[in-house]
Length: 264
Image (cartoon, rainbow, N blue to C red; front, side):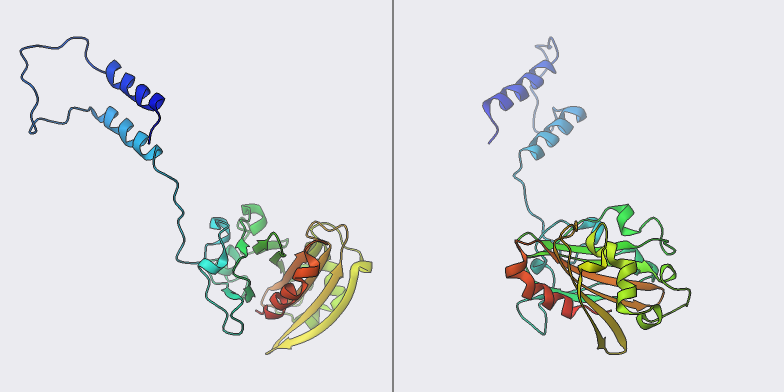
């Protein structure tokens, strides 16, 4: 309901817009007469009425793109994971990022707890301005839960790591060599080889992945990071799950499950 001051203000506007004098011989208006309110006054009424409507929440029927992400829980629009009902499945497609639309990155997928939210990515960090020939890495997508941590997909041009076209991750070098080149994109600032706790190699189908566990006390992403890297086409794709010291004790099992599920 509008306040008395709002009604008073509205009344004064109508009053001030009345003509100074009227013709007493003019017949009173009927239902067939033209609308009494001029177009400008009708437009004002329309805007004023809309301003009084309560806020409403609109739930999208599809996964929002990174530039349109509304920070709503992914469980409201992503399908349940077939492998674990406690997670939902995010499958990236051409509508999700500029690099996927240009064919510069192959589709990828991973699971998430339904309470996580997708975050917005600025145009410059998304690589939108440089596709399909970006010289530097960019962020594909990012998701977060304030109690559990965050995950992000970072893509790097293959040419930044090797001159061999369509190289595999093994062609680029050892797990240590790859993380030395991409470590700063795990931490968000700098990388020190002393921060690398574990490395491993895993195969999913024909694709090889290098996996890392890092303890990064000065990282912008968080003190604890689990990362997974692979190469496909013209791009090296890096998947990073991060948590703070406060988040890590209760979320490390969940973050490992998320990283396990990632594949291109």
